[in-house]
Image 1 (spheres, rainbow, N blue to C red):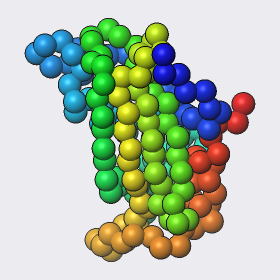
Image 2 (image 1 turned 180 degrees about the vertical axis):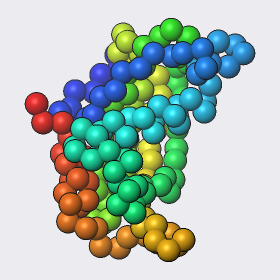
Image 3 (image 1 turned 45 degrees about the vertical axis):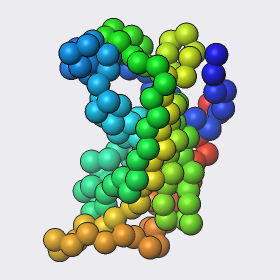
Image 4 (image 1 turned 135 degrees about the vertical axis):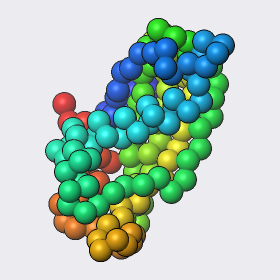
Amino acid sequence: MNKIKNNKTWELIKIVLPQHTDHAGVMWHGAYLNLLEEGRIDALNKVGLSYSELSQLGFEIPVMSLEVKYKIAFKHGEKVILKSKFTVINKIRLKCQTFFFKEEGDLAAESLLELVLVSKKNDSIRIVRKLPDEIRDLFFLLEKGPQI
């Protein structure tokens, strides 16, 4: 078993639904991306800012790079346990490492994402080189992990 026990990890539990599967009944590779997005949005909510509020402030956090390694397939009806860990890089970017576990604890997939904060103003999108204090604080709360 490959269990990660780390209080810095954000956890999200989902069920593989019919729309997540391909014709063979296994979770389609694109469904992993949806779950990764849901996991990031859930963690952001837990540190006190919804993604919609972030967008209303004129910011987005797009993916700059993405890598997924598949190990064991998920099937319709199975529980997926996502455990994500954030790292702040150069005070402006986020790295998000996520592990997908089976209910029994087996590691089924892992991913690595790099994200950056961008500003959307006057129809232009620019990378934010100096984070506003409140967003910087949220990034560091993501990195710190859930506080129990």
